[in-house]
Amino acid sequence: MFDQVVFAGGGGRCIWQIGFWESVVDEIQLSPRVVSAVSAGGLVAGLLLIGREQEAVDYVRSVFSTNRKNIYWGNLFRQEAVFPQYAICRNGIRQLFDNGPQALQGVAELRLAVSHPPAWMYGPLALTFGAVIYYADKGFPRNLHSMAATKLGFRQTFYRAQDCSNMDELEHLILSSSCTPPFTPRLQLNGREILDGGVVDNVPVGGLDAAEGRVLILLTNRFRNFPDCFTQRRGAQLWTYVQPSKPLPIKVWDFTNPEAVNKTLEIGRADGKALIDRLTKIANGGVAPSLGAA
Image 1: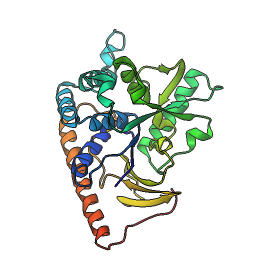
Image 2: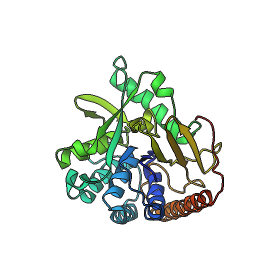
Image 3: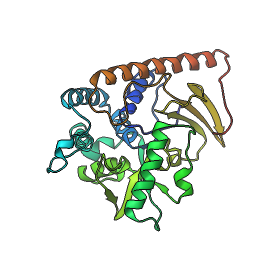
Image 4: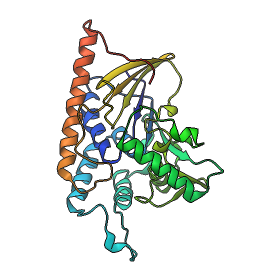
């Protein structure tokens, strides 16, 4: 039914995408040829494509149960990390993609987004502007596709996960798509400084092919001015957006709350079932809600 799928970023909120996917993948025979993703959505998308979602949930629950804080201020003048999120994600990638890039061969083409600051914007300045845009978009989502960073000269670039030749490259690409100092270190990709791909657009439709077909777009923010599920025509394509039906109990960078993981999964599963009900109604002659261009 859907030729391509988009996974928005959103840190811990991307757990919702796992619950949603579990509910719909068999019911609608979801087997896209292209997946465009960003940040934690890229990590989740890769694990779903190789069928490691249950192991991912088990890992997250285990780590969140033992991690006591999101910020360890006592490490400020030590060699240990102040923010534990980067190490948790890196270790999860290593553990869950146990066959490295080879595990992604034979599944949908996975395209991961990173953001490049404009050449004139010096490193610390780019980080500052990028952080302001990133956190404003996460905390106060208004538009489905933000244009603020693009107007400042930031650009989004997509890299194929299948082009990674080894585990080090795959790990670095996934982490680059999620690069959000100070929660992560500053990173470079191909010799250029990068930031989380969501700085430019946290709903990375720029990685889609233009071919005719249907696209499923999985959000993680809740946009109050849009329905839970709606379809828009974009050229030769139909884009179906689905967003969480209620505010998610898990926060973007909160890696301490395993119970919030469980609740977020359940919301995702319920929203997946709601989509199935909606598609069944349409097949039986119902009308799908739609909106104009976002």
